[in-house]
Length: 482
Ligand code: BGP
Image 1 (tube, rainbow, N blue to C red):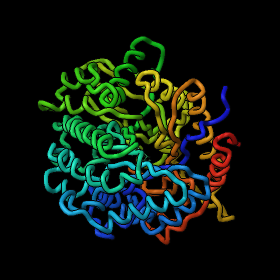
Image 2: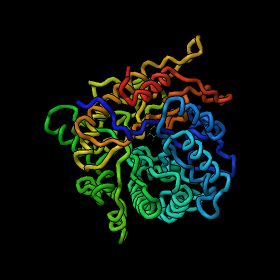
Image 3: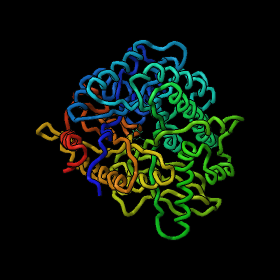
Image 4: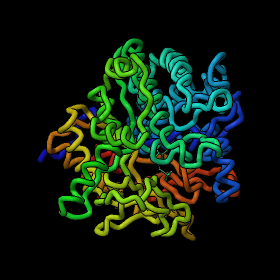
């Protein structure tokens, strides 16, 4: 097999605005829904707020220098809508617009290609107050206004765009990714999960068309949270459940991007259970008019599904979360009676937060998606959430993270050797940052941020062992993984 990665393959790492920037209320920025959601997590679970996180806003030059030291050729990050338009729409905030120019210029000066995500969970709070944010289809127009502005502003410097981060995960874990008012959490409004996703599909289509119209040489696609799904056993009922789960959890999203319509089996299931989105005249034509140039994948873990009988005592339930960071504390599994039930894969070890560690899943999903859609792929997230401990020598010996990243890069390479076209590999994450559901204790970075949930301290950057390892990997253009 071919040993070399292609010359133009991009190596970097990933982050998102509200999880890395901090400066939540500085430089003219106003609140996003994540500032509000994370205040609540601070009160309920003691997790850090989004106020400071890794403070990249004040450390971006240092962070770019560290990227350069590791030989990065790309950096994937998102723009905070509420930094550009503090009220969601109307007048742009010059300081916010300038911040991203400065960051992008710093990257480009160092030979690092920006991969820019337009939206990563952080709807401006002003729009949530005005009409409920993504719950209301009015947001599609406001998103178009925002997307048109940023694309025009940065189009000469940014050629690779991703639209909305992880629509599938937003449906599964909606209260962590969108602000949902208490009164909608009585179990009677679950259809709104799919309605939000439909509004996002419209916004995604508009954004793809805008990039194609406005950015010379630009390419665009969605970044999706994607887990391949295995059947719990080779019993035909389990294999069928796996296919049902694949339709509702994965194909429902990717078919929109590449076939321009909803997966039929998934939509029929949703219609039968009053969960299907309301689709207006012209919506499907708009969706079909947009083409994605690639699919960006956030891959952490594979999943497992088993048969679930359709009896009246079992109710629909949604994905569980492990908030404690103790293995096995996951709060239940998604269940759709008569269709499938997600479950633990007894054959795989997990992280302390119950995410199955499975490099083979990476090869499986890349080969499967490439076979089905025949579009280039990129990894925009992949990583191991762990409790990193600073040793008495002041260093972070994260050999477990090196082992994780190494095995996943090898799996990606095997997929490439079998013909899969890959654009980039960006592990999550450059620095330790705010987890979406577990505060600052669950660390992912190649660079340690010296802070706790309670105390942001100075956010000092400390290179982990994985930093030095990744630097060597990139120096050798992926050949030396030792
Ligand atoms: C993805 C998100 C990221 C990131 C990552 C790790 O779903 O795109 O924003 O946070 O998962 O998840 P967590 O922070 O919950 O550990």
